[in-house]
Amino acid sequence: MAHSPQVLSEEDEKTLREKWPKAARTKLEQKWSFGGIIASLSKSKHGTPLEVIDLLTHTYRMSSHIAHGDEMGINLIRERKSRSPKEENDVSIAHYLRLMSDGLNYCLLTAIYTCSYLKIDPQFFLELGKIQQKHGTRIKEYHMVPFTDKIYDRFR
Image (cartoon, rainbow, N blue to C red; front, top):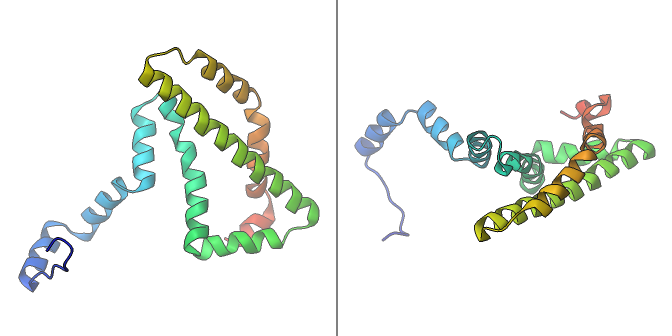
């Protein structure tokens, strides 16, 4: 019975729709969406390593657009193909740096939380994070390459 379709009577449906209007349903859905959960976690843990969990959102959004083949995902592909070889190279460097820095950040977060769980000193991993942050400005410059030129916005 748990897997069988449940059909509400018109009266039950009306009661539920009155109790949960579209605006309230949308607000609740957003709260429990991936982005909503990440936003809540990053705000509620200000000053802790969990604060940087919002770095997941960029990768998630881009992956989601491509996986769903929506307009933004298709336009990302079209936008890349419209660039000159130099611009395409710059964007590729930005993409690879993003993959590497995200991978490093995920590993550092995992290591820090593992240390916390095991009640051991995470200092080694915190120091690695500081070293990565020293290069963060340069990495962010490359991350922003696709967003700071006129060609990028042409496909929005």
